[in-house]
Image (cartoon, rainbow, N blue to C red; front, side):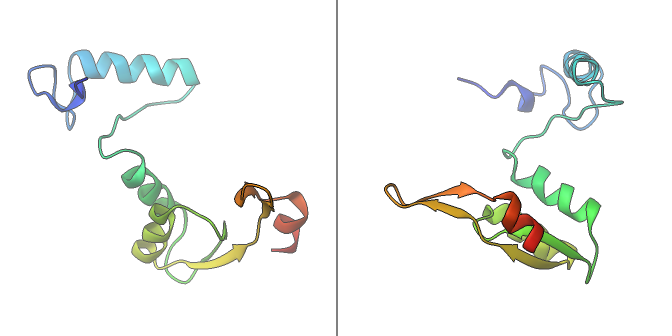
Length: 107
């Protein structure tokens, strides 16, 4: 029930040296990555950072119309210009089903 990553007695999230560093190193090894950083605040900050690190002011990025608000925040922070794709909907449940290959190609 506790978020152990923010407990300084465990380690320092901003400069891990013990348990968190070991966990990050093991996670990077598991996924074949050079490194791994844990984050708090859910994935919102990570999605924003991903967009800001990928596209810059006035560059174009293609996103689904139903993208999470963190994607929109990343667009605002990066200055990128969105091109929205439509997605298919389940008529019975009224929920988005994701982007089809045809919609992605059209965009």
